Structure formats: structure tokens, C-alpha cells
Length: 384
Ligand code: ZN
Image (cartoon, rainbow, N blue to C red; front, side, top):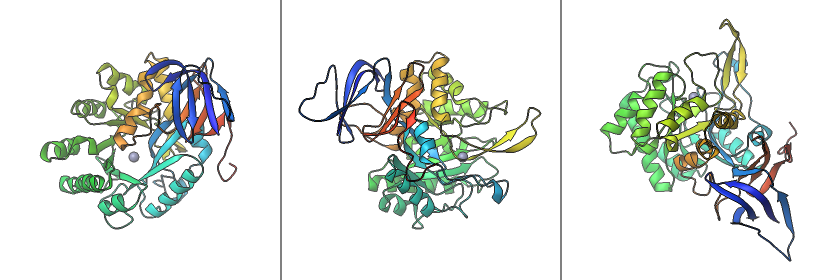
């Protein structure tokens, strides 16, 4: 069935004015003033006073759960579709983390397939924290070329006590395999690097950029708002043309850590907003401390923090057009998703309607309504 969202302020994420948007067969069919359709059944959604923005992309979610670093009882559970929808997220990349022993790429694949069946668009990274990375076929290149859902490698840990202490040569080989595997499969072949608190930060990535012919867009570091030194290193990386990712589900108790919206404002002022993405690190484990800094319990990273940080940036004075980029056009560029992250004719109809107070009102994925007037219409296969 056709849908028309009428009289809505359209942000592509650039501001387009008040328009009607026609959705046909999961795609955006037309964007214009006063679209009138007669002779066929059309579902009309009144967008008066509201804003239409692209569905959000979250390229780092532990969809099968994460954690386990405090023992088996600290393994976090799988994500549910409702959590994702509530966050306005319509495209995700699932990833393994520290644990590549009790969590497998096969399980990650199955969960990604399940979420796709339930209505959103899903991809996965092959590999995990360590080198050699866990893969499906024993080869990063084979995984990229033969498994449709695999669009990159990650998260490979560097500068972290939980990493495999990889050498530069090992890291180079992984990026090289991702590049060639990407070229042969028509994917971007990106490598998502988990960057820890170690002193070197992303120094290994600079070395790869300087000492190989591999383009910088294959290197995609995350958790770059973890501390101020990383934030500064990231500015240099972005100036060289690289993308830098900020994690939105962070703990606020670390005095050195910057909230993603603050980090974004810093990059905006440096003229580098087109080089920033946000990811939630959703479903990963988050240690919770009391006011005195004592460990209390493990929390779970929430995917809903992704849009919270966008909204926060707007409340702090960033224009909505800019604040939306890290969750729409920018990740679409990093991941090479041509039909995602933008409201334009022929793109996938992944859409979010925001109400007057910028709250998520309606979520549409591939033309299908998943949430309407703040009520989730589909909860996926299981109630939760
Ligand atoms: Zn990580």
C-alpha cells in the first residue's frame, strides 16, 4: 500500500522545507508539495508541526550480547527489536566483542537474520577483539566475498589491556584483507577498531596510513570520546580524511570521558562534522559506580542513547541538520550503504518522525510502520 506523510518538515538531513513524502513499495517515491493520489488506496500520515528525518544507523551493536568480563554471570543478553525501534534505529551493524569463544559469528549472523525478518536492515562485522580474528571461513576476504551480511571487520581491539597486543604488521594484514575483500565484493571493507585507554591511542592507525597505500577510509576507530587525548588524536585523523566514531552509551562517572554530544560540538567547531559518526555500543556491559567510585553492578549499554546524544547536541545549540549527520549520512558513507541515511527519491523508506519537542514519534523501516504515535506497532516475533 502507498503511504503519504503530509505537511512535514523534511530534513534529508539538510532542511528541505515543508513537503509531502510519498512511500511506494518500501522506497521513497516522491518528495513534493501537495502530492495527491487518486484511484488507489493511500495511507495518510499527518506530519503537521513535525519533522521527518532519515532512520538512524547504528554501526556498532552487540546484538547477541556482550560483556562477560566479570565472569559468566556478567554476560549481557541479546538485544530485542523493541529497544532498537524505540531508538529510531532502522539499520544496524552487529558485532562481537571481547568474547570470541562463547559467542560466535554464526550466532551473530542468525541474530542479524532474525532482526532483518522482523523489519529492520542488518549487517555484521566478521572478527572480534583479537588477532587472529574469529571468522566464518577462516579468512576475512572469504567472509566479505561470500557472506552477504558481512560488510567489514571488527571490533579489533588496539591500545587496550583486553586486546591481543597486535603488532603493526598484523593490523596491516587485516586492513589489507578487508580492502581487497571489499573491492572484490563491492563493499567498503571497513575495519572497526575498538580503541582502549592505552597511551598509544590510534598511533597504530596513523602508522598504517603513512606506511601503506591503503586509503584511510578503511580504518574506522570507535570509542574516540573515551578521553581527551583520543579526542585530539581523532581530530588529526579526521583532518587526514578518516571517520571517527563516538560511543553514546558511556558511563558519566569517568571525569576524563566526554559525552558524545560534547565531542560532536568540538568537531563541528573544527569544521569536521562530516567525519563523525555515533554508535551506541548497545547491549555491551557498562560498569556502574556509586558517587565514591565504588563498583556497584554491571549495566547494559542502551541503543536509545544514540538519538539522546543527537537531541542533546541540538539542545546545546547545534542545528538539527548537523546533529543528525553522525547517525544518518555519515555512517552510510563509512559503510557504503547507498540507499540509507538520506531522504531522497529512490532511497529506502527508512524514516523517523519527530514531534514538536524532538521526541521520536513514528518509525518506518523499508516502508513499514514499526512505531506510530510513540506506540510500538510490531514487537517482532516475540512479545518483550
Ligand atoms: Zn569496544
